[in-house]
Length: 56
Image (cartoon, rainbow, N blue to C red; front, side, top):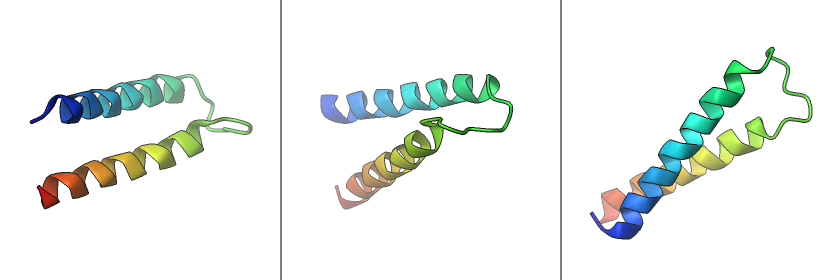
């Protein structure tokens, strides 16, 4: 695993931790929240990481 892959994995993990903390503080209503966009972007990042791993 390259340093870049390790950094990417760390970033994914940190974003997941942040989302977990943010979800603890919500009441289920995310009006004006960046959580939906962040979760979507995280999904794209994880998909790209998996695709890169598969193609390597």
